[in-house]
Image (cartoon, rainbow, N blue to C red):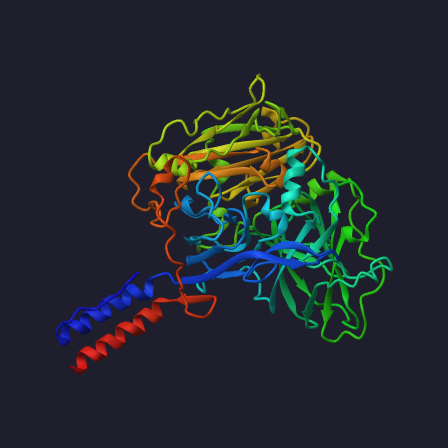
Length: 595
């Protein structure tokens, strides 16, 4: 918002000042970030390799903002291939132009910059961003997003003494380009070479690791204090079990929803998921403790690097962590993991981004308007190339993004014919889109016919996870649904040979990506877009950005790359609040009165 004052008589200036001051104080702040995405050289597992960093950091910087703030991120692509960043879990209310996936945006060419601008409207919680194209997520490029509550909205727990962001991820020493070729060639990249915590390899907890000499992560804490740990599985393929030696994990939030507060000794975190725990430093503090992330449901690896280990360091510690690592669940016990997932419930009495309680939306009482049963199958050859399908269709990204084709009424780019159930026909490669009814209530059942756990993610929304079970879903499976306090989130797991059901209220107009977040599955075509159009003229929906990059059939509209914007002069980020605008207005007023 731009506030200015014309040259007016004194009394008019005072009245105008008070009026504009009221408006400006009510405006939501803008925060500006200036990022350069480039390759860095690192040795997280002892082998020098190329990783993707932001402003020289791996993982990248944390976006720390507050509900309703406007976020402006100027991204310079210094990679040698096109780039898009997507914001996992950010809903981009009525603004899918900022989603950062190939269905909504042309990728940023090498050497170019592009500015994202979005509002974190009516959201709180823990999320992360990452590169969405060309298998780049396997090389890093990810970072955290924290959306804090506004001061007027109480948090359903005491303010913690500190805030810690942890990225746990499977890691491969092959480059993302080599992994990409392996996937295309049906070469199973197998168990990861190691597990990273915040970009670091494991602490040398065994004699086999003692000679490695590579750095490990340390979290410094004070005895008796409580910290909020925001833990993200930013990996590409592997479920990871997270635990801290001799400490309980009090679950309080997941992907923007406050949960019923329960203690866990460990938590299975699936690809793309985010959790918040309160951890109290209630041990003697005479020594350090292990922070552990280990693989689940994978081919076993004899390498000690296959377990990620960081150190929880008390300020009073007199010695290193000792003893065995805390025990994980039984490796292949999917029943344990499913029961744990079922135990996570929505805190219906707590407010989140708004004052009204989370449970005031009675999702279990709303009539469902559309039902989709989406079945994923193992990769198979289609027209001579390895592909993976949802309901028999492997998604093919067109050269013109779907959202741009829709904006310019270009026919033939996509079809609104994604089937509501698997069709009795040969699998095919196509650009088929789901047709959502604006303000409809959709039920989606994900049926996993593959042999590994899959994470399904939906951009633009938080959906209610209402049920999961082993076997085939049937109409009778609805009797198992949780219709009262199912957790609302944007990424859910589907176990092999099992199903997961979600409910989602389609109140966010746009073109939204629904995908399997396991990177090989996504890359081979297990994604689809959900088209939600408001049939009425909606002045609140964002129009096409002025800085849109054009590609495909709209390439002739692309102008030369504009000059890179320097928002701040020197700092990497700047916060512009309405208070600053108000002070500027006041200065103009004083100057006018002095004349």
